[in-house]
Length: 604
Image 1 (spheres, rainbow, N blue to C red):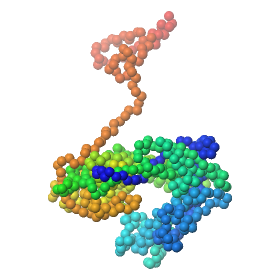
Image 2: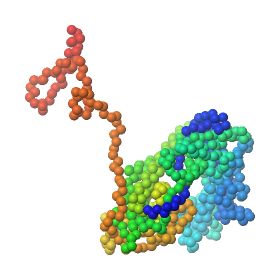
Image 3: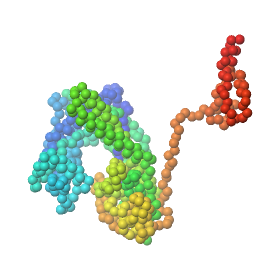
């Protein structure tokens, strides 16, 4: 890893929950239940106004303005969503008699414009694909210009929408020169109940951080339909900053996003910290990460020396600690719950009223269980992503690498590996793993770049010729170079090689990792020396959660794990040895119980 001596600013997010809420003016405490109710009223006002605004703006003219990026006077639209909405005259509507502060309106318009801007790209793609779509065959023609190119995975989703629309129209397709818009093939998007306070100013909310405590002051309504300004009061929320952020060089704390989940109010916060500035062109060592259908990923190291590129071809395979199997089980469970709920819905459409009520109750229970399964899967995916990021970052830091090369996810498709492997790879949280890897690698000054994935597992890193599979799918061997090994490790060497050769031509876009789009080849020879550190692989041993063993009493045989029971005062008569017993192999009869002796003693 190259140390440039400079620092760069980066943003990251975290979540926390308030443990104290008080009225800002009177200082009276507010219970958690009352706080959740008042936050729910705020989110209902915001989500209702946002949904109504999106439905009103769901027309082609809206996307034409966003695609052009200019208003009616030819001025460039600002980046701030609420400012752009104010310039275009997009104002939300609220129920009659309800008073909403203008800062809350800023939050509504900022969220709505952000959603529409994200869908403007899909509208442009649908225009290009619908012009090349053939309803009779359900296929799209090849693009004629570079501007018409759309990722294949994205194109397949649009083709499904176009096919469904053609079937709904009973095969009556539009004219060849007519182009569809996003408003023709799908309905307005559903909005989630949240409040991004970063779009407002101090009149709505402000944040202060003192030590390990965060204090958020925000205006909340005191009624479901506030009629005036007096029914909006400031509430001071106190939350704890997570312990892993206490010693981080954080330069700025940003206003959070309010969200309600099954546990209550959740604060989705963001912060800016200073990290070592990464230099993409100075390093000579790179780590390649190949996504695998069997596990989340594998890594290998390639080094550039004056004699050329070298690697020991000893890769590191990520151990998911059994979480992948758990994710597959939860996915199957969610699919079964979804299928069962869908079947009950079909039955409920023709069932009598009394039976329909019972079926609807069961459907609600199944939907709740399916939601809980989805929450579990999200937590496991996040845990696996950050654990994977820490493992690969530790490997890169120990090897002195300055670049981590990952496969370009836009060109990576899960096809041709069988139903089980395709499904496992498609459900893998690769995008979340890349984000986690980027976050952890930036903390040690390592840059994560994306490189083309085509041919990385099929070509030899030395001669760039197709590899053979003598030991099956997971093995690779080159007869010419006499190198090979695990298929994923060989692919990781290819990815690291492409990062080192194309680092001078990396393309940087705002909000994305640097991209290397040109594939260059140079032979990577096998080095006998150990080029990479041995990764730490802790053993996960079972821990017995039972109660600790008691201390043996004095006089008890220490070889026994369980202390002998305390003798009874009535156990004074030893049973006589039965006649005819000559050895230990003989079967002993039950001794005479001591209770009869005790009874005789008591009767005397």
